[in-house]
Length: 451
Image 1 (cartoon, one colour):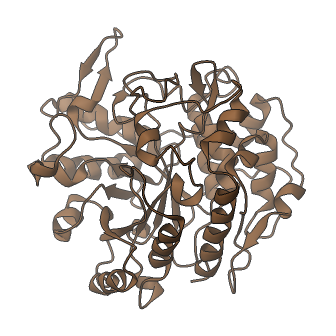
Image 2: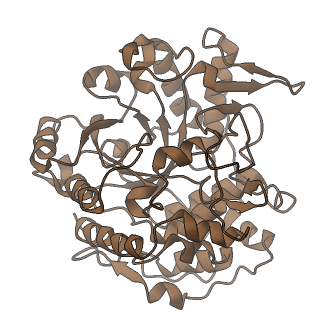
């Protein structure tokens, strides 16, 4: 039997978060942000964000300073001295996901790391929000967080740089990841309210949000009432229902989008390329899962992304997807423009342009990366025909030279040189060259947001 799960939260979760960290709710304009603000060029001048920065400069700021920075960047040119109630997601229509730019932010990597523990990645996301470009006039930017469910091994811990601690294995029917929420704040604000505060602040910035999840059965554990764990079985209808409801709970905390790892192989399709572990849903079962998430959350405007879902676009559209990743890189501007023309009549689903994916091991130069972003943002005949695009943290805030996107998905090292949280944030990312690159990315978005 299907059960709709609806969470009705009338409380202002941003104000509750401020009180939980012992800060007042009265906000003041943030001079630091004003001095680093970039604007869209042209008719969308009111769209703004901070750039020419290092992520550590934002991560060391307090939650109160971060909220004040977000309020200072208000697109409506109204400064709110108290964060508003009832924030709504930016409205780009029901099929916004077909056109969006998806930026995946590894929230675990920017967590607070001390000794061997790791927490509060969602607070790190809030601190980086001022540096995420807002949505354009014609399409949305959507921030995808890499982790929300607990990972199977080592959740809440950072480990040696070469020790596996993958976020591709998750637990359901339990709490949210200790890497991501602050359970130290839970007496004052619940894990769910922390997540909702992030979503409200993102939506206020004009940014949609989503999260990554997995479909491979042997990579999913279900926590039973007695505390024991069992591997998810797609042939068990109770497991399917639990999977759906766990994702509906998150959608009802304000997320707009879900990225499904290994979705290409649903129904046993092209299994010779499958790199996951365990069975995945049948095609009809995946249709049911996506339909029920929309139905039970009462949200017809969700975006569902399938990893590597390109080729037979009717197959993926009828499955219930809006975008497929890893179809074409942005290296060839005119090939992407031609693909955009090919899909101009497909308004529900389209394959997307890849700048970088979660399996990236290194090798792309800054110049190549900037060219790919330029292609993703401008390779079309009409802005209304733009293809979706997929970026990683590395595409906005370059990582240190000896790390890469896939490494921080598979491991959770601290790069702190003195044991402090701040040192990890400083050493996780590239420095002077990373700052200049961030400025160049901002220039590209500045020309795109008025489209």
